[in-house]
Length: 204
Image (tube, rainbow, N blue to C red; front, side, top):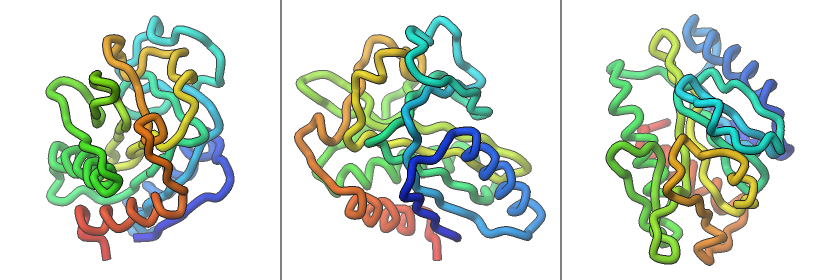
């Protein structure tokens, strides 16, 4: 497993191109599986289930994500982890559960109780007495190689989420570690992220 940490913001079209090329290489056994940690500049993406009405304000560039899911915001202060890896034993449901568990264990390290919710994609926390979303996930699978991944809100501008209905869910808000009163630097967060990844996915 190759781990790449991008220091500069990564444009979304480049990220799609990179993932497509890496997945093709994994399929034909010419490239390693990859965990890629990055931040995007402020933008919106939409997946195969998106409804155009959920784009409320065209305040940032909008990109087709070529993954499952609906509208999502990416931007500075949010850690995106794209994971390109073979699915064994070809169990997509288990893979999604593992992605969720990965997020939950990362949050637990910082004293945050992240939870799954039936019928709602992502990981949820209690903030100010209300359920709010702190992390999103979306995947695509090609010939049993998964790609795309997760996005965890460390300290993004939460106002930027108001331009969309995040993941098609309007009755719940969005939060971040910073909004919960937790300040964490990027290097520490990445260290925890990689450690928990290795535990859950048994990466060498």
